[in-house]
Image (cartoon, rainbow, N blue to C red; front, top):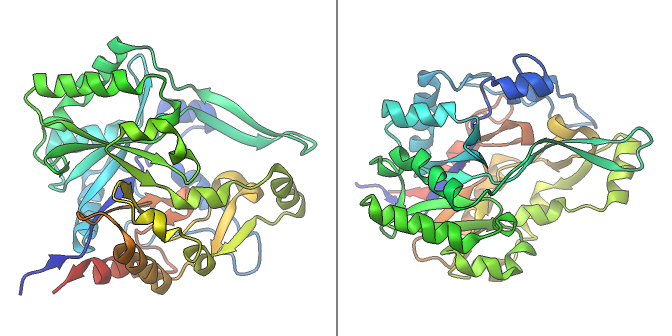
Length: 356
């Protein structure tokens, strides 16, 4: 009997698991996302830290075998594609590009992909000495130099756009923009890329803008083909005073995962221009300590209910859904196997997405 899909899921993929000179300079020799993950400690009773990866261990994305195993796991779980986060800061400056470039140049793994442009500056987040002010020190700034850079950006990714594995939606190249509100000239960017796509015998782009419930009210989102709603971002917008209290009491902000699922605005998800986001879990204390947010008891059985909830309420005929994320271990936001939950999240996806 053939296998049918009840939904099409694209998983965001973080390429932060290999050393680069910039991270060596900012954080110390050999730093990767695993550095924070491995040194994390529990901050309250029952807090699952450190979060330890199981099957693939503390992997290095420079290894092709790791990328192959990830693709096979995703395929088995019913995931349609990886959306690789891409860091283009302007003037030709990229970071963390090696894993994706090797995927494109090698032709492996044979698994669909698309690109999400993480168009934001990188900051080092900390409290000042008397905990009166939350500081963000600039590490590298996102720039938008103009049309020449927009053209250079396109051509840097042209081999990927021409790749047979690149994910198409409604016959178009799917491309995600992380922060539409920060782009100074969206029309110039979109028009230029559409012209260059036609010039290079490519199909047009299907532009998707990410945003939370409040951000998507901005008129800029009307220029996009669809909106990837990051519902959970809203739950992280805690007041400065609440974060100061959390830091002072040495206890991060916690919210039961089960309760979070009840806060989704299903009417909003039913809009045809909205692409919902799945979240298996969240715990970013390994990155930012006591000012982080933790979803407690994110059991796979609850994640399964969450998936069913989204599938049943999405207003999109194509049933396209994003998963945040495949491997954001530093945010405790992953579906890869870990020591506590094993393959629980992947099994939940498989059971909900694939039907016989």
